[in-house]
Image (cartoon, rainbow, N blue to C red; front, side, top):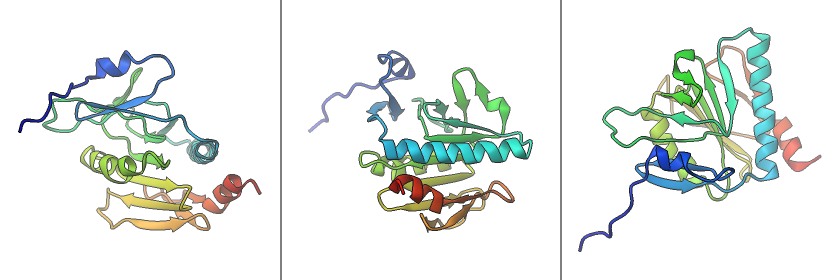
Length: 189
């Protein structure tokens, strides 16, 4: 029995969404995004600030962009474009940037898991980011108080940390983020 005809969406459909409505495009399908929770925003703000301060204090060449920020992972052999909005993107190659976002894989991506994004963050996006040449991918899960780190540049096995640990970014020599502070922010204590 044939499958029912499914509409294939394009980047133009993403651009045509009403103001304030956020979605991602993968394999011609639109995935709508729920508004972020307060916990999500606290984690995002802390991580974005720590990374930004590190780059600024080191006079670094990379830039950090929090969501909403457009990433177009250009995968070889893909006719249908992919449009993603990672929670945090760190881009070191300024040639990938234009006014629409990042074309190609950022160097480092952080996704903050919500109850509705688990499958997408842990499986679908991991595969896309790996294929797009992302060097490092962190999945921060506030519900589990865990951080799964994929050092894809060195083809290392994923490592799981917790909100009691300091986590080192592999794309930098000396950047460590103290997740005990994230735990304090999330718990409100």
